[in-house]
Every structure is written in C-alpha cells, then in structure tokens.
Image (cartoon, rainbow, N blue to C red; front, side):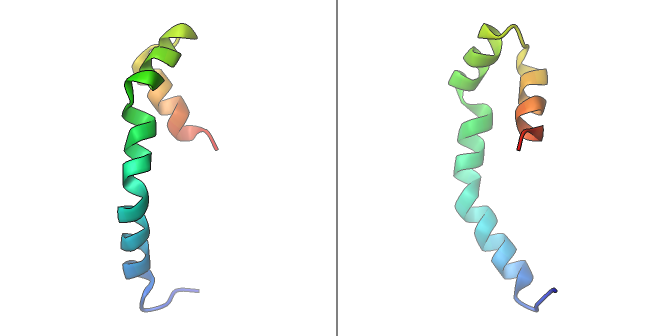
Length: 52
C-alpha cells in the first residue's frame, strides 16, 4: 500500500542510512578484507552489495 507520504519517508530513510552504507562499501578495511580473501575490490564491492 502506497501513501502520499511514502516518497518523503523513503527520502528521510535514505538520508539517515546513507552514511552507514558508504562506510561499509567504501571503507579501506573492506578492501583490505577482500584482498585477504583473494578477491579484488571491484568484485568484492558487488558481492557485498548483493549480500543480505
């Protein structure tokens, strides 16, 4: 069910969670962990995006 307020709620949620999103996907620690597993950064990024 969609409400007239749904776009505003979605935008607020995105603005709240985006800093965490960026910290996970673009952190140097994530790239180091990919390298330790033998995974290049690009495929590691896409795998982490696909993970639940």
